[in-house]
Image 1 (cartoon, rainbow, N blue to C red):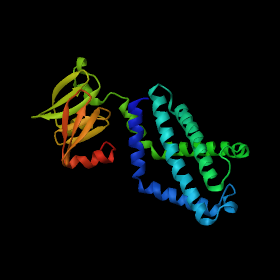
Image 2 (cartoon, rainbow, N blue to C red):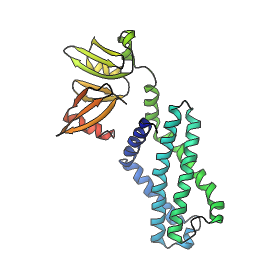
Image 3 (cartoon, rainbow, N blue to C red):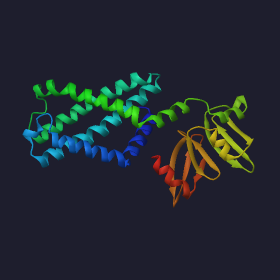
Image 4 (cartoon, helix red, strand yellow):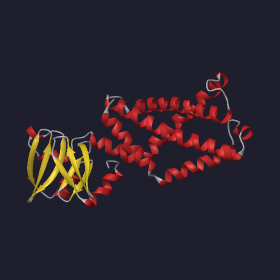
Length: 256
């Protein structure tokens, strides 16, 4: 499996887990389902078990669906599949997984046989369709900034126009050397007379890790802590320090 797709999905889920607004929304959905008692739960489950039943389903299905949709989309798009076909496929996979979760939790709470034919016939399609609708809403509402960043990542950053043609590989890092910026790519390195802040504005998605260093997204191969600081190993084998003040930003990005 594509490691970059797995790491991207991991970072996305870590961001969701830290999203307080999302947890409030999931709690509200759980409360509504508990009171409404759809799919016959109002008549088969008392209020307290019904609340825990719906809480388990809402939380498990949302994060399973988000993980499956994100991972499948990332894998398909890296293979050249368009955004919407990838979204539909990812959402369908998520729907099948969510139906398995709903079936297992329903069997646990109600004693219904796990592979009950009537249950499968009546509930499989609604669960899959609901998952696909939620996945589409999640894609259109929750990921616009990330999607824009991904589209920018597909375009050569403007900073490469300052580099000779024979050194215009994939951008790895920017580092200060006196009044120059050392632009490192997979094809070589070039010193350009400019400020680091201006170079970063032209560099596209990445992470400022030090007052003298910036690294491009996807170019970090390893991270190790060094007290309150950290050391990054880049794709070209170089190690760069992360100063203490930039460690929280890397944590927020899911890299630490």
